[in-house]
Image (cartoon, rainbow, N blue to C red; front, side, top):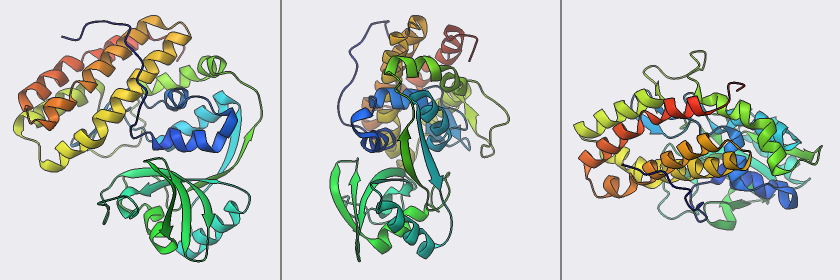
Length: 313
């Protein structure tokens, strides 16, 4: 049983490539990554894609879908472009980087060979900031822990094609980041929290793969999968990514909602963060009964969170 506590907000490493890349682009005017993640909508829900692949983020959500609300709430604009073949994408990237760093993604992490043990696609999305494109090498800040990393242009284009990922358009980048209004973090949270938390609702109009489940149904179905015996790929997905990013997002959202007076919702989010974080040990240690039990305890929290949020979302 997870007890209700104020908690100590987490600061440390973790798979926050989307928010970290955005913060780098925004420079001295960047809000905290906690605010970026919260306004993206990512902390508000759970999904089991196709009934098999779990994420502690909303039903039908992906990072790109939260971008408009994030930018608008913070008083920023930018321009997105994508598509074309590899040669056209390379030319577009070279032209863009001539005006400054470029936000790029999603890319397939498995093709980023500067990262140890990456030798091919692993169906994992990633975001980077490209600094320079030379004759043979792309230079980037990779927020996975690799500043000024380099990669052959051809390999970068392969990763950027993103054809092994479940979402996103090939060769997507964002340029022209411009701050149009000075907005404090608290103001941004108040402006954008309604659209962000709306992701908690299971909107049937969202485009999802067949069999995808959300929130309580996702947690309960994942518990059933775990009791039946997860394969190594599913276990690794939770152990290396989904639990880590899920718990951190929830913890950050709890902190952000408390800042704007949504105390009841903040308490539920903090409980969710603690429960999701507590999955890490039993997942790694193969205590599958404990994983299933925690997921079943977690399932009712989505209804509680919905009830604690304002009706205006």
